[in-house]
Structure formats: structure tokens, C-alpha cells
Image (cartoon, rainbow, N blue to C red; front, side, top):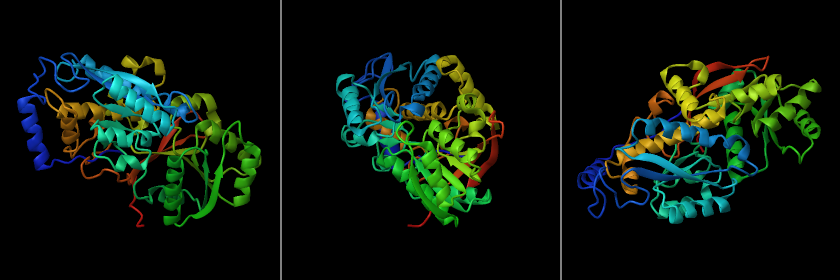
Length: 405
């Protein structure tokens, strides 16, 4: 099981934060009872920006990001917000491309005057340098290496640090011996994740069956299936959307060549089971957060918040809304650490000083300050049952180690 970030309490940062909260914002602005000098902060509101791909090639699973954001902000605003200020947001569609992402960030910062940004996208590299230069706090989905580079960027789980052997160890325990990577030909971040998955397999003694790209509507699933069969792979690791994976699996199974192990980066979504049913049977997904099936107070609180403040999503037991909920919770924590009259630097310094962040139990505690850029080594694994009606927790927690370069 998994997930969480690193947070550290440097003495100097603590002293700086203490001084900042004692004197108010720069320029002698008032505390919670009045406006601050920081952009996006007024007497009653804190305005933030949200960037995600509402359209474009990678929009499918990430379109649900706003539901998790709505739920977490609804929860905190119902309690009066942060120091009496409710959190509101403006959102922009970056279409999953760095160029559009950069334009979206500039618009939010320069024209909408937001305090900070939540990025649920695979194209944050487009705006990373700009947001760092401007000192804008950012939380979000760490799908690219830039999340390890900039001090103003925070995430609870990284996929771009040193590879880990956990995935390969799990596949080997399920009988896999030769793995092929199925991926959508999209971005550099997708390729980087794929490379690390293959390295994880090899570290566990699983041979490399190669890489095959498949994009629905552009490629022939039967031809792709034949390439997989020819590779001799008994394990399929997929960095695609679920529709693409199900199409290829259908071809493999109809030819009598069902893989022994199927592992996917995403697809942990009860709505997908309703759509694809037995087509997803046997698909395993590694999780860096608490599985819904494990239950407990943290999961119950999340589901209740989704039902109250994001009813449009229908089914709250979905991976992307949960991840965006945690990303937003991390932003809320940064605002809490920034004091009565938050500044952007106060947010960054304060969140960088947290050493035991667990999003109220949704993830295992992480050290935000010391763990930036380090990939998670411990995961839970869930698998779709044979009927395609539910996920089973097949491994509550499996911890591995980083692979030496």
C-alpha cells in the first residue's frame, strides 16, 4: 500500500515561518481579519488555479480530476475555510501538452492572479520553470522529472525517481517470466515510466519482451496482439488507457494466448468495471494509497466528501479523483502551514518542513522535505476478479528497494 510525501522541519525554515506569521504579510498587511498583500488572498477568499487535460489525447482518465478537487475544497470550505477564507479556483485545460500548459499557467498567474496551482496533468514540464521563477506553490501529479527538480512543486508520490524492484517482484510472485510493455505513443513522461517498469522487471529476473505501442483508432488491435504473441511474453505491463488495454486483451484471449500476468498503471475505477466487465478480468493495478476495499475511517471520509461535494462523478471509488483529492489536501496543508496571512514563500517553506504527512490516513506517512523525487517503494496491489465485477486486494503491502544505477 502506499503513498506519501516527504516533509522536513528545518530549524531555519521554522524560524522564518514563525517570524512571517507574527508580523503578517510582507508590507505589514493585516491578518485573517483583513486583506493580505499576496496575490489571490483577500479577506474572505484564497483563489487558486487548476490545470488538467479536459481535452486531448490523455484527457480520458484525467477528466475526473476536478471531482476530487471539488470534494476536498468542499470539505474544508464547509468548515469555514482556512483562517476564515474559503478556497475557490479557476481552471484551465492544457490538453496534455507542455505548450498549452505553459500558456494556462501564465494566464492563471498573470491575469487571474491566483495564489498557487494544482496540476493534475502529464505536461507540467511546460510551466515548471516559469512557476518556479515566480515562486508559485504547486501540488499535483508527479508524472515528470520536473517534480523532483523544483522546491515549489509538491507531490505525494513520484514515478520518475530511481526505478524500484517492487513491480517486478510482484510479477515474479505471480509466475511471470517474460514481460512486454504495451504503451500509448504519447509523451516523454509515458516513455520514462515505461522504462522504469522494464527495469523493475529485469531487476526481479524477468526478461524483456520488448515494447509495443497501441493507440485505439490508429492501430489494429489484432496486429498488436500478434506482435505480443510473437514476443513470447507471458506478462503484459500496460501504460495505456483502459479502453486500449481491453481491446488488446480481447484479441489475445480469443486466440488462446491470454497473458499469465497483466499489470496496468491505471484502471482502478469501479465505473470501468461496469463498462468493461469480464474484459478487465485479471488486470492488476499497483496503488500507492490505501485501497478502497481495505475500508477504514480515511476511506469513509473520502467517499462521504465525494458524495456531498462532487456528486457529478457518480462513483467515488476511482483512482484519479482520489489522487486529486490528496493533491488538494496537500495544498490545504500548505496553506495551513503558511499562517494567518499566507504568502507563497510561507506556503513553500511551511510544507517543506512537514515530516509526517499522511492525508488523514489515505496514504502512508511521507517525509516531504527529504523525499522529493524519490519513487515510492511500497505498493498495494488490487486485481479484477474473474467476473469483472469487483477488485480484490491481492497484496495489502509489498515493499521493495531502489535499483542501483
